[in-house]
Amino acid sequence: MESVHDRFIPSGVQPRISPAQICLFLQQCEKYHDHSRLDDSRLYNKPITITLVDVMESRLVTGSSRDRYFALSYVWGELSMFQATMTNKPLLEMPGSLNKFAKEIPKLIQDAISFVLAMGERYLWVDSLCIEQDNPSQKHDQISQMDGIYSQAVATIVALSSPSAASALPGVLIDNLAALASYESTHDLGSRAEAKLAASLEQIISESHYETRVWTFQERLLSKRCLLFTNTGVYFQCSEILMLVYNKGFTLRELNFNVLPECILSKNNFGSDWTSAFSGYARLVRDYSKRHLSYASDALNAFGGILKLFKHRFEGDIISGLPVRVLDEALLWVPVNEDAQQRIRNNYFPSWSWAGW
Image 1 (cartoon, rainbow, N blue to C red):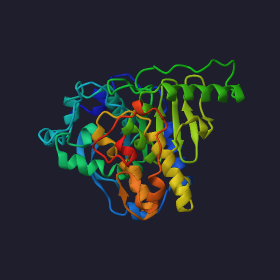
Image 2: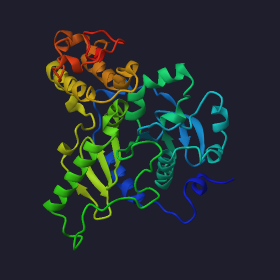
Image 3: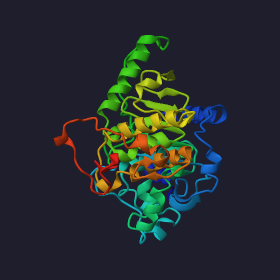
């Protein structure tokens, strides 16, 4: 049987980035860093049944959030995606079945499969293959559990520089990483290098289509760890560190968290009391509501995982995106843009909610 390695990784081609080095960072992070947000044992004490891509057997399998898996966060784009459906799902569960559709599976997803395989890991969760896209009941169930799916993954592969699923995941199979700078020696890694790295990542983020979409907002923030794939390098991010782990010019540089517009959610986002927790909630709503939405009905779905955490934090319901426990404050939201002509009504939600605009 032709293996997924044979189909997705051409003969003689090796990944350009160093999977071994990234594995080392993952191991150290899993061993020493604390990524608990609230009482995770209460939030996620019951495993979620999910479909996973078995990259070793090149097929879909039924698993759970207790399995060791990676998640993929990316922008679909306008292309017609190969998707799992109720009809083809049984076929895709056959060993080697994904090999048969390799030419139809978007390049970015192929690269993510290749990367997970090169890491020596087995499972990948990607929405287009792991949710039956023509099954409304399953889609609703999985969307409502996005916080569990992303937060329980070992790490999330973030395609930060890829405008669509048709794009490559930089550095996986082709040497498409641009060097940030050339240095006379590998020891020249002082403040100039840090400044160059920070400026590069800030520019990537400011120009990234990924950072404009609503769905990708919570996918990155809910993850324990992220591998940020950009056109200039691969960055490792968790709630305690932001590190460049691969670039053509140099490796292993720690950066300041301020480079990123939002960091992975940690205990600090939920505060020591309701007042500070509400401040964290308000900041996230502000940043989220700047993003672009393809379907108005998704305004709360794409923020639902974050709202679930705040529901747990406030120990009360969330109504149309507003925490009931602090409803008096939550109702006092104001639009950033004061020009009334720039406001667009979203009739799926009440006008007294920020989601209604």
